[in-house]
Amino acid sequence: MLIEIWERLRGYDKWVQTEAVVASSTVEETKQTVHGQPAPSTWASGDELVWTDRQGQRQSAEFTVPDDSPLYQLIGGETITIRYNPAQPEQFYYRELLRTRVHTAVKTAFGVLLFAGAFAWLIWFR
Image (cartoon, rainbow, N blue to C red; front, side, top):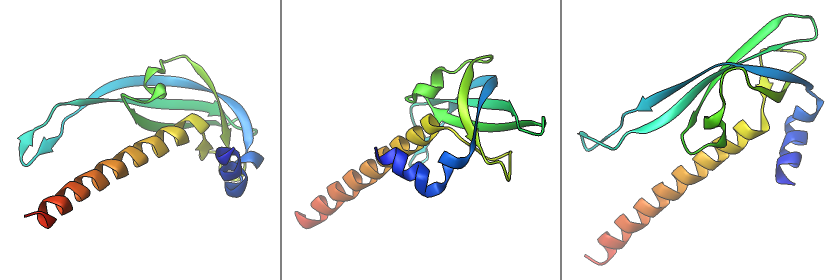
């Protein structure tokens, strides 16, 4: 329900719906450090989408998703339904990608709040 409201507010519901092909999908290790020390690695999938606009022009876009996203499972050759901006055909919207980005943002915000709360608790009871 909220996502449909968001799509209408942003105008995505007026964009052209089409099929896009996952042209390539690569898995990459993302190395992180905590206090200068190596942290456990995470994985991300880098994907390239290709579609044809109304003028017959080939359009493409790349995106990366973390390993906990359902989109991490996309493989080359797979077809998905997207919407693209008719005024700027290189701009696309994919609902599942929005969901992944919102999920990642909420998870990050929750982690920051948890860390800040624990830090505040330690300061308060010190």
